[in-house]
Amino acid sequence: MNIDISDLSAAELDELIARAAARRAMLEPAQSVQPPEKAEAVVNPAWHTSPLPNGVLFMLRHPGLGWLGFALPHEHRVHLASLWLHQSLLYKPVEPVTPVATAAAVAPGFGTGGSGTMH
Image (tube, rainbow, N blue to C red; front, side, top):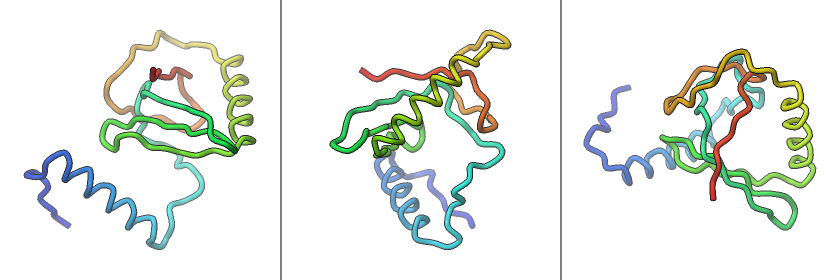
């Protein structure tokens, strides 16, 4: 498939991406519930979190997709906090980490443990 998107503005691309993602969510086969063995990852993304009545809003900023929001129930917030604390206690740096503005290929379960901030 060859679709020329070179003349689209940022707003037009944002709309195209949102509509394509909504359409993909309706198609079979559905996206796998298991993470892939390898994935492209944004290094040190900006993030935001705020409480919801029954959980938390967790947002990550992707340079091409923008802010991706996830509403997590309270028990998932507790589980993530426990997992991240456990991983932080086990973390032993192998080499100094230099922030990179581009995506990097990483395998789930591995990483440097850093995070961005959003104020």
